[in-house]
Length: 448
Image (cartoon, helix red, strand yellow):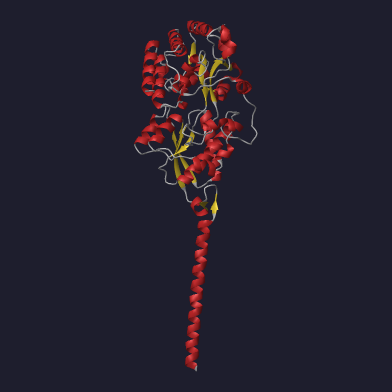
């Protein structure tokens, strides 16, 4: 009997051990499953994964207050939202995308990079940019877009390649009111008045116009200003193959730039000046005018106060002043923060790119008083609009037409040819006939 009781005790002990081991195993499995399934954030990242330190390389603009402040603001917000993510900034070169294209060609693309239409069109052919269609919906980014700015989200093929922050932007011709007054020069409303102003300033030792023509897009913008005085669609119509450079509006645009350059429009070595150098001439009162996008408003206001304003582009002639007053150069197009398809964690990189774009826009609106955005911001502005932005905000509903920035042109071959040709116009050693021939040859080859 004792023997059987001992055997029974042993068997019962075995059952207890088996039950305990099984229960522990089940508990461990439940805990593991819970850690895997518990998600946080838009992308469904696990808490455990979110806590792992991650470093992402980002290629972004960081050249002036309009690019530094929003980037820093977005980074600080990211530290609070995703403290495990560290961004390694690779400052975007002022080289019209050449450095980024070299990165792509050598397999060294950053995880996140700022892109315009030119980069999008080039990189999608080589599979160097991630298609964001599903991510734009998953992150809720698409729901935050302004309906009027959807052209900044979708490329021509109907796909999304970048998270935009900028809306439809414009090229402005800034001027120093004090310099005009002190030199008794009339603010020009026509081309003839502009030519007279250039000659007057030059005779008095004042640089008429500063431009950072080392970058090619301002050269395109200056040319587009004159082309749009006769053809409101400007460079956009050339890009679309609907016009030729030999047509009056485009040939005359080249002729007028050449005439102005020969009259002394630009500072010496204009095609070697970067933004910092060109802006310094204007901000320090050494140049009467300056060409840039409307994002320049804050920097110029900070430097010159109420001495600075922007003028309407000088019209073709006195009869067309009012007719073409609201035909602006510039516009919007697909662009913003894009993601490399080769990044190790696509979900995380996309989430960070979308977040950075939203915060970038948030800063531009709340702290920099810039209403020209792609996405909605539901926060109050921290300071009133500068006078020039207030003036622009009143005129925006009156705009009759826009064209494009160089980075918003759809054909990379035409874009490259136009950039080169307009930059050469500023050297004073390039004829209007050569300009027309070079562009029309490219347009003809493209449209064959």
